[in-house]
Amino acid sequence: MTSVVDARASSVLEAIPAPLVVVDGRGRIAATNPRLEGLVGRPRGELLGQDFRALGGSSERGAVEGPVALGPHVSTIVRADGVARVIEWEIAAFPVDGDAARHFVCVAKDVSEARALGARVSALEAEVTAARSRCDTLIRAFPGWVALLDSEGRVVVRSDMPRESERWLIGAKIWELPAIAGRADIQAAAREAFTRAAGGEPVRFEAAGEGMTGSFEVEVVCHPIRACGGDLVNVAVFAIDVRERNAAMEALRESEERLREAQQIARIGSWSLDLVTNHLIWSDEIFRIFEIDPASFGASYDAFLEAIHPDDRDLVNDAYLRSLAMRERYEIVHRLRMSDGRVKYVREIGRSSYDDEGRPLRSIGTVQDISAEVRADRALQQALAERETLLREIHHRVKNNLQVISSLLHFQAKKARTPADVAAFAEGRDRLLAMILVHEKLYQSQELSRVPFGDYVRSLTGALLASLDRDRRIAVDLALDDVLLPIEVALPSGMILCELLTNAFKYSFPEPRRGRVQIAVLRGGDTLYLRVSDDGIGFPEGFEPDAVTSFGWQLVRNLSAQLDASLTIGGEAGAQIEISIPLSEGTFAARPEEEAP
Image 1 (tube, rainbow, N blue to C red):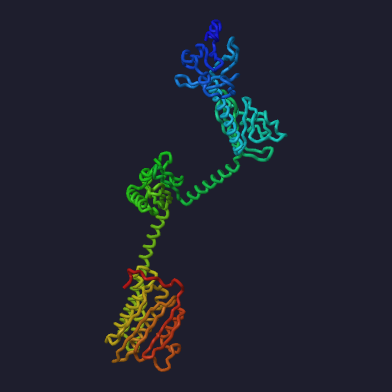
Image 2 (image 1 turned 90 degrees about the vertical axis):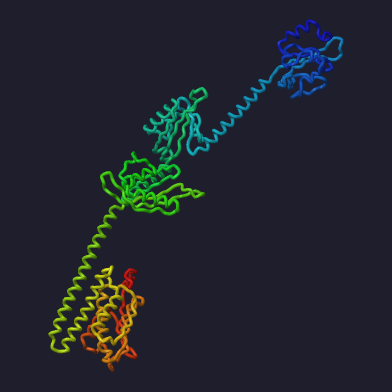
């Protein structure tokens, strides 16, 4: 070193407050100072004689011409402890007496922290730029009007680009905008909202009126924007048109009101039970039906069970749990007991929804107050029972009265002096028998307005045979459809059959002749067919029913006309008479199974 740097220079080198190194013409380190040693973390003895380029590492800029690059030079030094430092070099050449090659003074400056700080600043600037871009995007995407206000309430940024004629709005105070000019109430609300927002409180209010471009309904939000230190930077104002929303909300309110009114009129309410949280929701009408204060209701399934009549709780719970397990519709009628002891009847209907694994999630349904219907039904059933009892009593008394008349005819017949008189009394009693049997069947029937006509014909046939065929010379075949006929059809039809059977039993088989009578009561569509046929002596030669003047045949013709029925006669061996009675739709009734013979 002494050949390159004299003692005075060496002293100066030691005193220089910056890391410094002297490089000879061959690029070798000829001298250093202590600060360089501290920078690279290696002692001076290891550095002297080393290639300067090995110390400098890879070059970031500057062309190397020869052993050293002149001018500014940036490189990376890896310290002995492995820490990399970025070094900025200032390199200058100087001549040395007696040495043809130039020497170099290289002053080092550690710029690692500055470089890192610059990188951080650049990153922050990029982040700020990105944040501003996102903010601008959000402002443009907001479906309304956005503005930033300064601390005095003046507009400094608007979301919509103003036309040239509106540029003066920038700088206007928010409560002085033309859109609300003349509306003192809105201006006061805007001023108050800004003042509160500037004080740190987010504020929301609605305004409606007529602006420069027509009517408006807006919701306005004022929100403070503060710096990191807490100082107010701006107040953000967001305004959005809420006409459609308000119209939809009004329509929803009207719909809910109509639903409440409909539920109240129908005395029916709706409920929803979340089976995951056990939270129960009732409509207002259910609270009215149960007469429970919503504030005191537990809003759970258990609370619902507690409101049910104690005698019906297990029934309701079992029915609901069964519907969940079977995934079926839930429907039940049960009682409620009010606090004053009154009892109500309600009908509940519901259904449940399930997840993909079959677990029940939610049940919904309705509750309807049917107390009035239950009471009305009970009153109706009681009235029907009383009416049925009265009708049975009437039929029973009519039958008894007719039997009394029949008995009187029987005793009166004993006083008759001629066989013709006795026969007349007997025929009268048979005709009474046809009427007596109708009332007897009605009295015995479960349906008091209809006669089981098959049973009636069996009874009538048996009674007439017992009276008119005491020698048992006549066999009877029956073909009877089980039908129920109203009394206005059954009574004349029975009397017609009584006359036809009486004629067959009395006149078709003169002694000692035996024979067979077929009796049919058949339904074909809406027509009732009454047929009596026998294998007896048949009709007289030239018999014409319309020409017969006997009382019995006149009765048959008159009753047939009353029923709008047609009468036909025939029979090759014996006689056959058929009465076809047209009946209106619905006259026939299916016979109850419990009445089947």
